[in-house]
Image 1 (cartoon, helix red, strand yellow):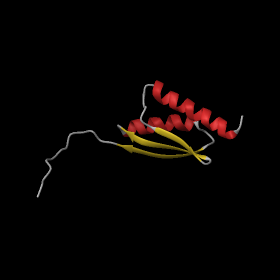
Image 2 (image 1 turned 120 degrees about the horizontal axis):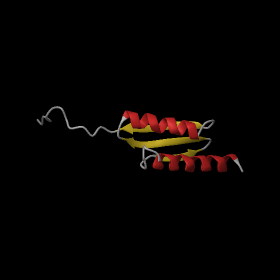
Image 3 (image 1 turned 60 degrees about the horizontal axis):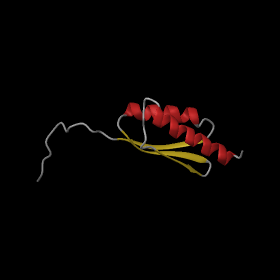
Image 4 (image 1 turned 135 degrees about the vertical axis):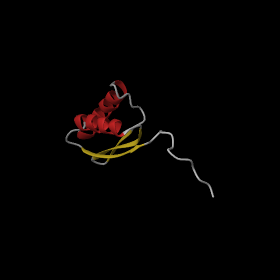
Length: 84
């Protein structure tokens, strides 16, 4: 099995873990770019982001991991919007 095949297998396993564990995250994109793996997308909280990165580091240990996970706030605004 080549290194590329191994990386693809590990990415698939990471996707399965993100979908099936308590985090149940399906919106994260995971791509292999050259020798590295890139995770990107939006998450609901900083805790969710940290959990995704923890799982990714476990599954992809030894591979170059880059991430662009954005935390989206869904809270109600704390002040009215002022239009001029």
